Each structure stands twice: as structure tokens, then as C-alpha cells.
Length: 91
Image (cartoon, rainbow, N blue to C red):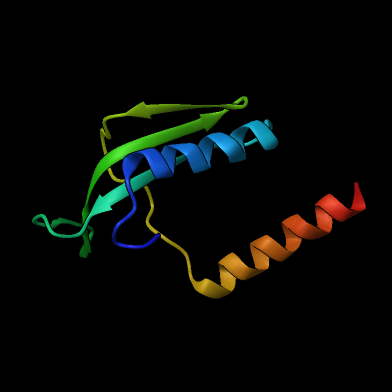
């Protein structure tokens, strides 16, 4: 995500992904890094400002009730994408 992405851009991307892979079931939050942070178990989390619920080929937009686990390392993401590509090629 770049700094200038719009809510519509994010929604459209998730809509395309969810209709392509209808089996997905996940939640995604956009974080406002400019607001005050909350402290939880000794870690500082930025506040989520909106949540996308991706399921059954659709996307719902909700107000977050809590902060989901944040992020992953770039290596984890790269490996997850490689595994996804492998699964798609194998099917």
C-alpha cells in the first residue's frame, strides 16, 4: 500500500481478489499511523480505522471493534505468495 491509496482503491482490489478466490475468509484492517497509539501487552499498536471482511466472494466494510494481529515480515509474505502460486499451478 502506498500513502495515497483511496478507500475505493482498496475495496476494488479486495473485491477482485474475493471474486477470483471465493474460498478466502479473512479480515483486513487499514491502520491510521498518525493517530495516538494504544498499548497492549507491552506492544504499541496503531489504531485501525476501517476493516474489510472478505468471505464467500464478497467484501463487507465494518468499523473495527479491536485491533487484529498486525503485519508479517516480507519473507513470510514472499513465501506465502510462492506457495499460493504453487497451489494454483498444481490444480
